[in-house]
Image (cartoon, rainbow, N blue to C red; front, side):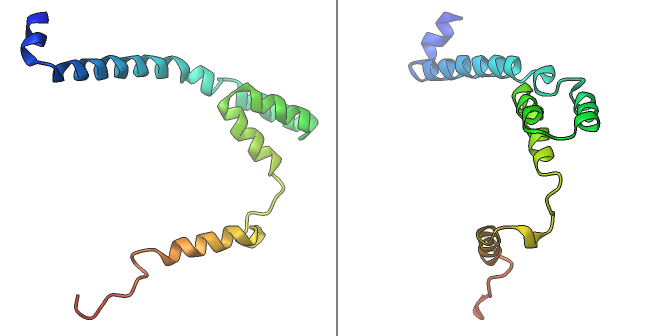
Length: 115
């Protein structure tokens, strides 16, 4: 095996290094992104139970946000559960940026007569 690597020359060493780094990243991501850590199996049931008993308070939201990444998402949703969902409630800067993005769309640019 080592003879094959030596015969391939110096470029193969970069490929081997990249392969080792890729395997290390795959192992690290599979360990850190375990489903039980990201989405605890009883989290949703616990959140519903606490919400029905106590409602929403800052202490519960902070504890929920620290629990898991899904807890952070649920805490953000509970913080804004009474806010309006219409576009009129967005701050003016948000509506300006979305209209600028829409104006750059290739579908809205006029075509020249020569095309």
